[in-house]
Each structure stands twice: as structure tokens, then as C-alpha cells.
Length: 223
Image (tube, rainbow, N blue to C red; front, side):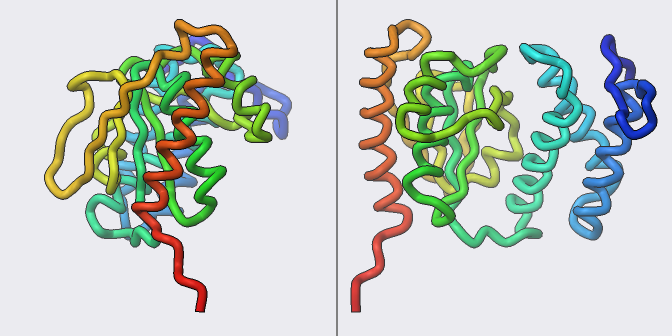
């Protein structure tokens, strides 16, 4: 696999091709998932993740690093779906079209409200280049940073690993598997709204997330 843009290896003061960087990433992940996922599968998912992100990535400077994070999450989901890695808390997947607005807000609010009681992922059926600036502003107003988040394509492994799948305007793009809870939240698309409108969507999502979290992890009674 070749790449149009090289990546700096600061330690050596030179340039490595994207392929070399990705092979190193695959080696690290293969070691982490030893006995769980084969090295061949690990490498395939790393390169697939990079290729998928490269098609829509807004900034390529750190794309290999982002691809490694994306691949690590996909490998974890794959292992979870096969019962090779435990799921200590419910897994929730939010899906919209661009993974730049509604699903990102829902995922961020779930992390904010549920903490480590729920593990959350998000994805897009047609991922955008970047998260919408108005969405970043609306979440920043609640003290929720999004500097580590990025639009991600929907993959089969994360759907299989989820206990609850919440779709938002992406139609039939999400595959359906038995034994999972599917919900469709009808919400306005932040891409069509000004900041005031995005705030309204954010607040509506917050209410829905609060209800969902209460169902997935009911509060323990006080003794």
C-alpha cells in the first residue's frame, strides 16, 4: 500500500511512508491482541481503517495515528462480538449520516452523563470530513471537549459488538442483527441549522440519552 503523503518520524529525523507507519501500528496492535485476533487480521483492519479514513479525512498530518486508534477500537469490537473480550458495561453505538453532528453529540453526551457505566461508539454511513464547528461549540458550552474525536465510517464489527444501536437519519444503512436493541431517533440535522438550532438538538439528544442510560444502567437503590 502506498500513500500520497509521508509522515514524519521525529525520532529519526526522516520520513517514513504511510505503509511503514501503518505496519508498525499493526505490529503494536498485533502484540496487544495476541491470542485474540490473528496478526493477519490485525494488519488488514489497520490498512482498511487508514484507507477508509483517507477517503474523507480533512487533515492528513496525523492520519496514520488516527487510523491506529480507529483500528484498535474496531479490533476490540471484533473481539467483543466473538466473545473473546468481556463487555463489562453496555455497548452503545450511535449512527448518523456524516458522524459529524447528531451521533457525535449523542456519543459525547453519553460519555459525559454515564461516565464508565456505558461504553459508547459512533459512526457515519457517509462520514464527513470533520465534525461540524457548531457542534463543537455547542458541546464546548457544556464543558465537553471533542479534540480527540473524528468522523468514522460505519463498520460491521462495531454493529456486532453493540448492545444498543441508535440510528439518526441514516435509513437502512445499518445492518440488523438479532439480539440487539435498535432505536431510531428522529432529529433535525445540525448541518442545516444555526448555532441556536444546534443547541436545541443538543438538548433534545441530552434528554433522550438520559432516558437511555437510565434504562441500560438503572440507578442502584440507596441502602
